[in-house]
Each structure stands twice: as structure tokens, then as C-alpha cells.
Length: 256
Image (cartoon, rainbow, N blue to C red; front, side, top):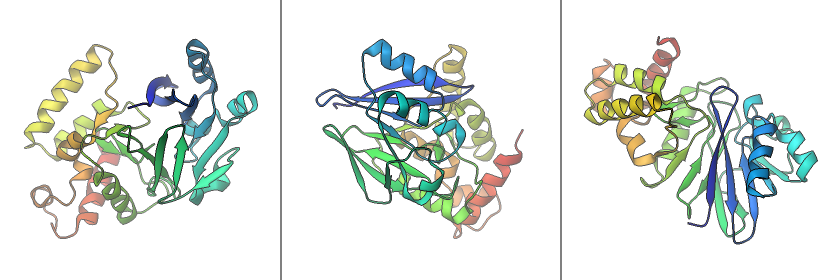
């Protein structure tokens, strides 16, 4: 693996990801919520920003775009389906397109649902997935602009990636997500064990992201809407996973 990945906490619970490809010196930041912490991290490491990768248009993902572009002259890359709402965008990409970051290559995956135009960046060689607010550790994003079938289809695309892929999502929501997941899937022993581990991590002040995709497949209820046992436990038709997903997402929206 030649891609060095640095976590930058921003705002109250955002994670911005800084990617450094040392062979060619390329440096990208994923979803820069706030230019200040990004600038400080770049300065501490002696790196110069070459790219911004945006997954979607929300302000807590693009808030640093224009200031960082003005300072570094970097190239802003974002989803073609939402290019009109990505500040400063230079390159608009969609499903199946690729982006080279030095010796590393990202494949773009269209994953709408949270917003109408949302992209994920999968660096296969580095085993790293940057999925914004589509998939979270033990959760998924709210559907602000998309539909349940659309979001479920997007999650299936991400679920199809290799188990050893690390999921670099954009928020530290894992502990609260775990509480809902255990409510939704109380018989899942892997989930119960993971929830205990998360509580211990957070008590020590540790981040819970990234997480292995294989673990998400076993414990994240939003990736298991086509599991007949989960559907039956909620009194739902196991042959309609999009409806099961919709029920889980509505339940999470009102869960306290």
C-alpha cells in the first residue's frame, strides 16, 4: 500500500481524510469541511495539496473547497450528477470513471440516496473506500433527496466490494448507530460484541473509523435488509429488501 491516510477531525463529529501518495507527491483531501484543520495538518507534514475529492454537496463536506483552492491551486473533483452544487469543481466524474492520484487509482461509484448526486471513491490497491454519508460504521445516511430503493441499490454496490476494504466514512456516529443496530437486530452476537468494543473505544477517546467492510456486512443492519431472518423479525416480507431497508431507515430516523 502506497497511500498514506490521515484522519482530520473537524466541526463536532466530521472526519476529513488526507491522502498522500509518496511516489508522486500527490495529496488529496476528501470532503474538507473546514479549511483550518486541513491547512494545519498539511503544514505539519510538509505536504502541498493537489486535489480535493468531494462525495456530495453538503456544506460540512465542501465548506473548505474555495479557500483551499485559492491557497493551493488544487483540482476539485466531484460527482457529475451534482456538479452544479460542488463549489469550485474542475472535474466531474460518474459511475465507472477513474481518477489517478499518483500511483494509486480510485474508481468512482455513484451512490445516490442521501443526496441526488453522491459519489464514493474506491482505491482498490489501497483497500480504501471513501463513501461520504452513504455508508457509516453501523449505519447509513438519511435520505434527504433520494428514495429507499435508490439508497438500498447504492448500499448493495458498496457491499459488493471486498471484505478487507476499509470504510472511511465522514462522521463519528458509530456509538449512537450501535444503539439502534442492537435495537433492530438484538440476536446478532457479532453486533453485541462490536457494540461493547465501541463503547470501550469511545470511553478511551478513540476513533471508531475506519471499519472493515466485512465487519459491516455482518453487523450493520442497513447492509442486511435482504437477510430473511432480519426481515421476519420485523414482521416484513423477506422478498422485498428495499421495503425492509425503508422500514429500518424510518425507524432509525425516530429512534431515541
